[in-house]
Amino acid sequence: MNKISIIIPILNEAEYIGRLLDHLHLNSTPNNIADIIVVDGGSTDASKNIVGEFENVILLESEKGRAKQMNFGARKANGNILYFLHADSFPPKNFDSLIIKEIENGNQAGCFRMSFDHDHWWLRLASWLTQFKWRACRGGDQSQYISKTLFNELGGFDESYIIYEDNDLINKLYARKEFTVISEKLTTSARCYRKNGIWRLQYHFWTIYVKKWFGASAEEIHRYYKKNII
Image (cartoon, rainbow, N blue to C red; front, side):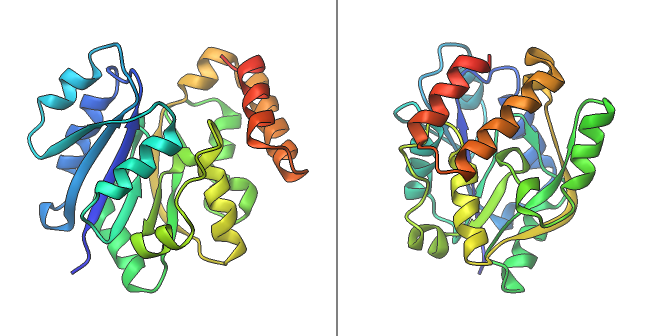
């Protein structure tokens, strides 16, 4: 029987993590969920205390770094399907059944369409574009499901990436033609756009995408991110 392990890496996510865990319980069927695993990378706020208030949620502590945290969670997961989710991204109702249906149809990896919690026209356009399977329309905020077998075959997330680890794995999946987009929408926070400015942040995201396209290393991408994005 197909069961999902939900893996959520966090670092100082007290604002969102409790809301997300409530949301997951309200929008899924318990029989479909093997476990919900929150992997903390050294939070100094109330994140861990909030997670501890939830029954049937496993809290793990790991070295800082989303790739390291998600790989650690995957090693502890009991489900045959891994679902990687950011703390500020809220999947659609019955997300678990939708993912299992894709697995049963032979689609071993994919994501949901996405909408932002912001009504700026550019973010609405960016959200609309996520319905297409173009590689340029993908990102970690859309969440990602993948069969554990395929995840292990690919070697998991590349831990040399401090950022862009989601996209690195997505690139590998696209190269194998192993990626689908589920038509229902996940809602994610636009907090990074609010903090940095929509056009400024979009410019830097495009620059990172192009740098990676032309072969930039994980270290070079991280240096650029640290220099330009708050």
